Image (cartoon, one colour):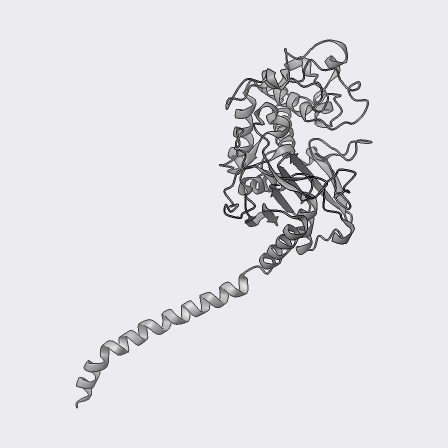
Length: 392
């Protein structure tokens, strides 16, 4: 057989070989390269979360990690129900609870940067429906940001005064607590209060002449690309535990009536984006104003808590509802932080889970699981706050 005939006969096979081999080489290189560049922390984070879920009896949670100012990990774990038929996903809407306070703090400082508001401004300068009598007239913007306003925390409340639904009304929000006496003279001491931040939200609204909800959306949510962020989060429900270690389902219900202090919500992606925005200075010219020190104030700054690890500054805030725990903690200097959402009440420790994840990245708080009694904060049960900040 002539060479030309042989070549013609095997030509398709030769061409196929020359086409296939390079493709196989590229695929092999791609797989190898992907294996080499896959961050090793992903498996470690999963392991930590799974261990903590078992130890704390967590049914479902979601976590997010920001490293070097970039979101490097967002994942959901577990389920909504004890039968484990309804998985938590990265699109599950969780309540932020008191992480709403940093949102309102950012809004207030944005108004300050645009000369619509000042830390020394009194509430009565802007909010006509706040009582201008007694010591209530002395509350300033700084007092509200520092939790030194004297406004009570869930006492003498008339929740029925809030009648709006899916249309946040700042005046009705303030009417829930405006008739109650202050717990102390403004500025004289510290006391954590959700209602103080509700009043701050109303002050931002009146000072800017823009509805509070819209102001937050324009200056925070839209800037960070937080597309699931909402003032009217649905409540997927969660779990609580009594002192007999019985776990039951629990639902918080509507929280629109306390939106600026504890009502915002989103999926885990958007909570991570909010923390990323704080870390990268997306919202404010001087984000560090949020955590400037306030003497004798229980480490509470201006809508954020202060702490440190090995001399590195740490900013954080957590949140609590009857069926949820949330947490946001980060190191501004190294642009690293962790956010956590858990569908359970105070029998779990959201800070512990977050800090265990941080240890994977070298931020080791040295928390010993054996020193903790995971059964809630009731004194008859024990205390799950050992080694972990507690503020709600």
